Image (cartoon, rainbow, N blue to C red):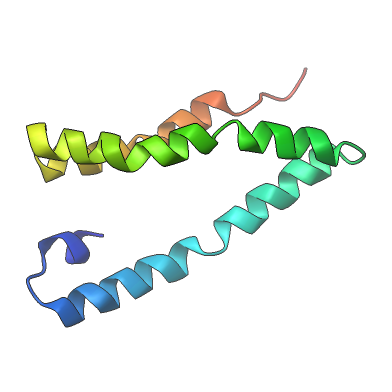
Length: 96
């Protein structure tokens, strides 16, 4: 990610983007499979809960652009870096 953000070469940016995409491509199917595994006979529920995030997906590029425009690129990347922390905070805890 740092290489992508700091480069001035279009070719290095393309290679960096490709490497980043390779690292992220497998996470969505794994998360989706885990959601279906936790709710085996309730695929409709999984789809409904997953669709609750659609408005945020649409608004996220605008939010990141607003942050980058007002506070700089580093602040917007920091905002995006909060996503894993928020996921860990929202993850269900095992019952004791």
